[in-house]
Amino acid sequence: MKGLYSKNMSVDSNKTFYLETFGCQMNVHDSEKVIGTLVHEGYRQVETVEQADLILYNTCSIRDKAEQKVFHRLADYKKLLAQGKKFGVLGCVAQQEGEKIFERAPHVSLVCGSASYRKLPEMLFELEKNWAAVPNRAEESQVPSSEFTHSGNTRNPRLATQSLVRITGLDDRETDECFETEFTARTNPHRGYITIIEGCDKFCAYCVVPFTRGKERSRTSESVLAEARQMADLGYTEIQLLGQNVNSYKDPAGKPGGGFSRKRTFAELLAAVGEVPGIRRVRFTTSHPRDFGRDIIEAIDAVPTLCDHVHLPVQSGSDRVLNAMQRLYTREQYMERIAWMKAAKREISITSDVIVGFPGETEEDFAETLSLLDEVGYDSVFTFKYSPRPNTPSLALEDAIPDEEKARRLEVLMARQREIQIARYKKYIGIISEVMVEGRNESRAQWIGRTSQNKTLNFTAPEPSAPKVGSYVPVRATASFPNSLVGEMVV
Ligand code: SAM
Ligand code: SF4
Image (cartoon, rainbow, N blue to C red; front, side, top):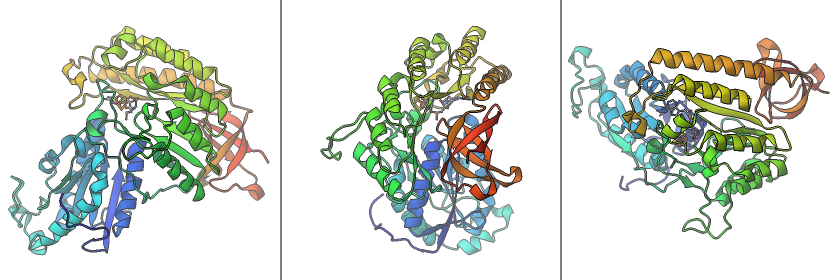
């Protein structure tokens, strides 16, 4: 887009927006940055679609179900176009489907992939300007529905089922841009995300991310640390470093635009964030097993603020399936990394992602995944049925496993993992852990806490010692469930 735009040059500063986010933590944090950007541009965030002039969906396309959700949501509200509301699709579905979204949902005016968010201010300006220029909008909304037509992408102002404005921000995979902004609107005043790496170069056979989020590009460690210090100054005590593969992080320091500061490895960056005064907890997600070095565990051993939790997605316990998935490691190599974690000074809680029903997965392959669950003893596993995705290499494989069989395997897997968690969580009864107080559940008369291991520990506290949200308090676990602990604050 070429440049009539200048900062804060909004056509009407009394604009409202509604934003709904689907998908992973990366999307949640992208939305915080998008919200901050919109507010800086003079928009006001509102709680409902009905109150908004601009309705935005930050979308996820990791599985077909997630993608369909967005189109259902768009269909539910398309009638609001006649009231002059504008619709925008952001994120992975936007990047994946591009201009095809205007055909599937003709009432949409803005389509913007995550790699183009830095251009949002200009795009919003264009949107408002073109929108204001469309003639007879009020008259148009009074056209009886029988006269509406869905066909074509014309600019006939009498059509109130399709937007007459089309703005797109679709970078290609090779973009070097990162979305860094000083206007992040963080929703939690105590813990917050920092993106350290965007995109992905791994191309796992089933995954759309390399196509929707572009190639890997890391921020300089200096800029990450500056953001961490700024957050600490604002009173944040917990930071979560984010990336599709955080441990593929490559510090661009020294490169053009990277300044002359020294390069840090991911483990060094992790330790440096952990040493920022005021920061009490540092988490990171997600790690890829291929790039998971022992130095990460050494950093956790050396720096007490680094949380004793590692999320290391395995996807399958079978070498044959791992190879077909192009995961770039074997079960043995994965277990080597688990062994490093188990040898750490503090007990590290290990969690994972598993896909069942990848094309060609046999009963034997599946049994190997079950045996891997037993061998590792995860504290939590996100389980998914394989979902064929556009552009991915595994689309060429025959998706031979019927959905009912995938569903059966998923159930078996979840049941096995549940047993493992029941046994694992029981071991914490009687143990005192420090929790960050996240809130209060009035109906249960309990405080909600989270341990460094990322376990939920709900607890009671005597009235005079009621803890503050965001504070850290010691809690003794007195009972366990498969996904949480219950306890009493130690006073
Ligand atoms: N980058 C991380 C990694 O390498 O494991 C995870 C990224 S992805 C957003 C989160 C999880 O979604 C993956 O670990 C995988 O288990 C699941 N997933 C991705 N594509 C999938 C697909 N096509 N079908 C089912 N599950 C999928
Ligand atoms: Fe997807 Fe694999 Fe990249 Fe993770 S590493 S985002 S699963 S392609």
